[in-house]
Length: 386
Image (cartoon, rainbow, N blue to C red):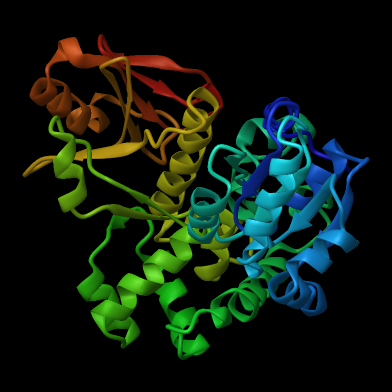
C-alpha cells in the first residue's frame, strides 16, 4: 500500500518552478518511491549501480546523453563531478522547471555540491521517516508501542507483516557496507557498528565525546568524524541548547538523539513492542520519539529552519524548546498516562528563569487519552496533539 506523504504538495510545487530539486534524507525514508510516484513521466537511473556511478563520475557528458532530462537521478552523491555538467545543461534551458530531480543520503555532500555548482538553480528538501500523522492516516489501529518499535520506515508500514528486527538489522548492515565503507576515515566497520550502538545507549542525553570515545575504544578525533558522518546521513539528531545570546549555542554540548525510534529499538535489541514498556530505556525511547515528532512539526511550519533546541541551566533542564516570533514554547517528555504538577517542576523553573512574558506555551508530552491542564500555565498533551 502507498502511504501519502505531507511533503508531496511541496515537492510538486517547487518542481513546477525550479529546474533542479534535490531531495535528501536517510536511506529507506522513501525518497525514490516518492519522486517516481509524483513524476511518472521522468526517466530514472540509480547511482547505487557501480557501472552507472562510474560513468557519471568519469564521463558525465556521456552519462547525461544516455539519461537526458527530465530525469530522476538516485544517490547522486556518488558522482560529485556530475553536478557541474548538470549546471551546464540547466543553463541552456534555465526557465524549464523540473529538469533534474536528484536524491541523496549524505546531506552535507549534497549541500556542498549544490552550493558550489547549482546555486540559484536547485531547491534542497529533506525527507524524513513517516510522521505519526502519516502513519495513523494509513493505519488508525497502530498502537503507540508499535509506532515506537517500527519507527518511521515506510516499508515497515506499507507491509506490516515484515519483521522490524530483521529489516533494521539488515538496514544497519547495508548502511555500514554501502555508505560507511566509502569514507576513508572509517578504518573498522566493527568499531563503527559499536559506535552506533553506543550512540543508541546515549539517545536523549548530552553528548560527551570523550566518554563515547572511551567506550568505543577510538580516539576523540575519530568520534568527531563519525558524528559528522551519521548526522549527515540522517541517522542521528543533534539538538543545540537555547540561549538568549545565539552565539552561545555553538559552544555548548548538544543532546544526541537517534533519528528514528525503530532504529533505536533495534540497536537496543528490543524484539517486540511489549519489550519497550519493560525496558530501562523506555524514557529515552519516548523522549526520542517526541523529538522526531516535534522535528516533523517544525519542518511543516518552517521547512528550512532549524528550530528545535533544549534548555538547560545549572540545575534544571527542559527537553525541548521551539521559538516563533520571539516567543518560546517549552516541551517536556514524560512516559506517563497522567502527568501531574510534580512532573512540571522543570517547566515552572524555566518559565520563571526565562520570564512568563516570553513563553507562548508549556506542555508535558505524555500519553493522556485527552489533553488537560496541569497548572494554569502548563498542560498535558499527547503526540497526536502536536
